[in-house]
Structure formats: C-alpha cells, structure tokens
Length: 243
Ligand SMILES: Nc1nc2c(ncn2[C@@H]2O[C@H](COP(=O)(O)OP(=O)(O)O)[C@@H](O)[C@H]2O)c(=O)[nH]1
Ligand SMILES: [Mg+2]
Image: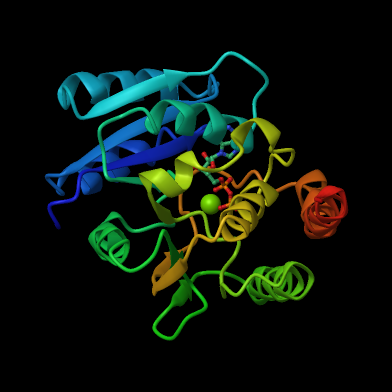
C-alpha cells in the first residue's frame, strides 16, 4: 500500500453474507479505513457492520441511514462525512465482492496522476467474470450511449469502484445531484469532468456476486437512459445563462 491514507465508502443493502469477507480484504491494507453506509437492511447487515467496527476499532465506521433508501442518497450522506476526514483519498466500492479489495492499492496509487481513478472493466487488462451475455451487452451498450451523449472519455462510466482525491470529490455539487440509482455514478463523473478533473482508469477484474441479490430494477434502467440527456441539457441551460 502507498502511504496515502484512504477512506472507502461502502453502501450496503442486504449484504450480510458478503460484508465480513469484504472487510477482511480491506483490513489487509494498513492505510485504509472504511465507512459502511447501511440503509436499515432487513437482513441485519447493519448489526454485522457494527460488530466488525468493534473488532477493528478506529478503522471502521458505520452510518445507519433512516431517511428514504437509495444508492445515490447513501453515497451523498457518506461522502459529505468523508470529505471532512483527514484522508488523502476517498474510494467508492460495492459490498458484494464484485470489486476485489486486492486491487485497491492500484487505484489509490493512480491518484498520483488523476483526480478520480476508475476501476475499469473496459480498458486493456480489464475483465468480467460470470456475467451472462445479456448483462455484458447491456453494460457495453450503456457505456457507449453515455460516452456518445455526454462526451465523457472514460471507457467504464458505470463502474462503482473508484478512488478520488479528496479535493476533487469535495468540489462536486452534492446538493444538486438528482439521480439516485446507477446514474448517480455517471452524474458524479460528468460533474467532475465539467470541473476540469482528470479521469484515469486502471483495469480490474469484476466478478458477479455469488451471495445476495442485485438491486438493478426497471426504474433504475429507465433513469439510466434519461440521465445523460438531462446532464447535457442542464449544462446547455447553464451556458446560455452565463454572461
Ligand atoms: N445503502 C444502500 N446501498 C445499496 C442500495 N442499493 C444497492 N446498494 C449497494 O450498492 C452496491 C451495488 O448494488 P448491487 O445490487 O450489487 O448492484 P449491481 O452490482 O449493479 O447489480 C452493493 O454494495 C449494494 O448493497 C440502497 O438502496 N442503499
Ligand atoms: Mg453488484
């Protein structure tokens, strides 16, 4: 691990079978702390997170949300708290073991050269394990669509594995974010690039979850189709208003 201090924000909803393994993997890196943001998971993930926090005192914090549930909302709450912490880098990661904690040092190290580093499936060396063709095609299509509409240059705009320089994350307009599902991840990148942040990518091997269930829904997919257009039209309106 590099000497950079990192805080990893992990949103959870019904991840009791995965969280202990994820935490064990992350705790192997000495300069890493974790903030679990749980949405009152009915399966008791929040209690498991509390027990892990006691076991690794000072390195794990748990936020128990009580407001309306959502991935974007959870990230906003977690990030607001995280940017006030004395760390160099703030990371985002799924709890379902799709994102290998062993790759974290690579992502953190790459923040030397970029303001936000994406753990990317779609740069040379990136891989996906155990995804059916249909799921691969959907993800590929989503990324092509996002890149064409928003002109973002990143190959993997929907990856939830990312490391940010703290200042780049703190510069985002968290109060103005609208999307909540996976589009939230796209909105974050778009706003970062609008602010001149350099976006880097390092290859990862993404593995489909073995335990628990995905929360990808039809509503989330619909939001994903609309968000790129909303982002660029908000931008155009802002440009017109500018003197
Ligand atoms: N706090 C919180 N976490 C969520 C919510 N929905 C999904 N997550 C977490 O976000 C991460 C990615 O979700 P997942 O269902 O695996 O999405 P997929 O990988 O695209 O199928 C996992 O860690 C989930 O537990 C939510 O509403 N609230
Ligand atoms: Mg997943």
